[in-house]
Image (cartoon, rainbow over all chains, first blue to last red; front, side, top):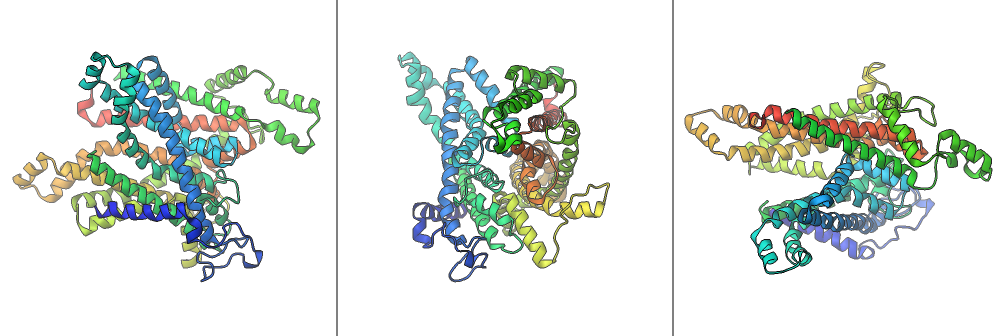
Length: 262
Length: 314
């Protein structure tokens, strides 16, 4: 249980950085100053400066909102679309279930990162394309979870009873099946978060993420790799923040799983 | 067994066909093709543009372009790269050998580290050692693979004053060079997969050790070694094989980033360069190959599962 608490503490820390990055990092993440380029960490610049003299601490702190926000948004879209379609497929079945299942198979024949490279590579860099790619990658996961949960739910007596009582299919689906399937989707959301975060960071690192000079952890790492042997501090911190936030969500996922008894 | 195999093969073939079609359409869905890249800013010469499009077959309807490509693939011909003029089949195969060496070395290292760690953690559940191994798992699963690679580069340079060679050499050309190029990428990939293994095996061991037959064996006077390694571990082997397939597919994906970081001429770099240059035959051929490999791994795992577990034999 201590691990679960550590996860919550870390999450609270990142929540502060998301809500008030300017309160933690006083300097601007955008101000250039070639005169102070590639300086190692110091009292003035805790995480050092990058190749154009921007404060790495400010960039990493302000990057929290961008990186975690993009992952949060993409997974919300994937949950809504994938989970929604899955519930309908599991509940209604028939041709819709079959067609959607084949489409999910198709997306999942690609290793996730390769699907991400393909979509962002073709569409070009940019936050919206990144969100689209991540959402497409994870829609099938939520589709399957929603489908199997709804399938199990549809066979329970209360659904049959509601039907006998004269409720319409739509109302059974929305008012009764959905609330019962929702916790399963939420748990899956938390479990997928660290995985999606790794893909987000990897795409940023390949230069396929957000457009510069947006401070995104993956993008900072991409910039840092060219200076890795002269300025390690450009790469150490953003990677460490990815590690910590992924670990936080993993711990919370493990805790939730224990609570749900799965 | 034959019916099962036929059904699985059928589903795999449909998925591969659909995904090839998806790749084909996505590549052509956005403006900007090879002709645009070749003519660049000089544009405006409509005649040259149209001639080039006709040369690449881009002026024909989409369905006929796809049918031609698919027909050639079914005859074993992936076409030629629009940039290099070399057969895509050869380029993909050369890149695959690099990726394969990386993936197999990673799988071996990850198995050698991860499985023993998981077994030990499972046996000593709740101990300080178990907690230490679980911390390793958490860090290994959370650290970005390419970031580990960067940190290893810094560490090797600071501590050993050593950096891997820049130019690629295959194992037949210069084995020593080949190994020194691959050592850092393999370690960075293997940490993640070892952590995944260890986590998975720990859970399996704990589940297995809680079963009645273990208690019966203990009562019978079996030594812990016999209990753990002869009985528990042999039952854990079946899910482990499935997991190995999963890991191998994950490694295939993970190499894309690592190949880019360490400049290895593998499949990931081929795909990335192909997409950026709008070299359709290369992208379509390489992704088709990746899909076939990933599907085959999954299929083999399913078959092995049936072979290892006598209860599943029809």
